[in-house]
Length: 80
Image 1: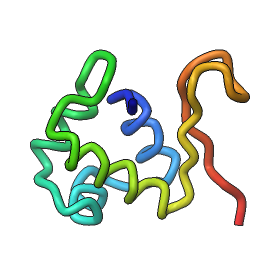
Image 2 (image 1 turned 180 degrees about the vertical axis):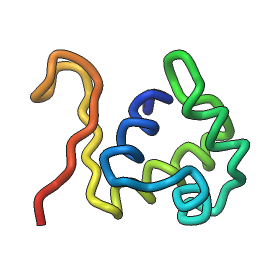
Image 3 (image 1 turned 90 degrees about the vertical axis):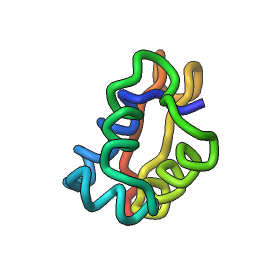
C-alpha cells in the first residue's frame, strides 16, 4: 500500500515536478495529482500506482511502512 502523501513527499524529496514524475511513470499529470491528493491509499488503477512507486524507487526512494524504522508510513532517500 502506498499513501498519496508518501508519493508527494517522495517526489519533493527528489526535487521532481509532477510533470517529470508523471513522464517517468508513463501516466498523465491529472492521474498523479489525484494520487497525491488521496486521503489514505493512493487512488487510481493498481498498475498506475505501481508504476509511480517503481519510478520513485528507481530514483532512490525507499517506502517505509508502519513498524519498520519509523512509527508510521514515510519515505527515505537511499544514499548512493
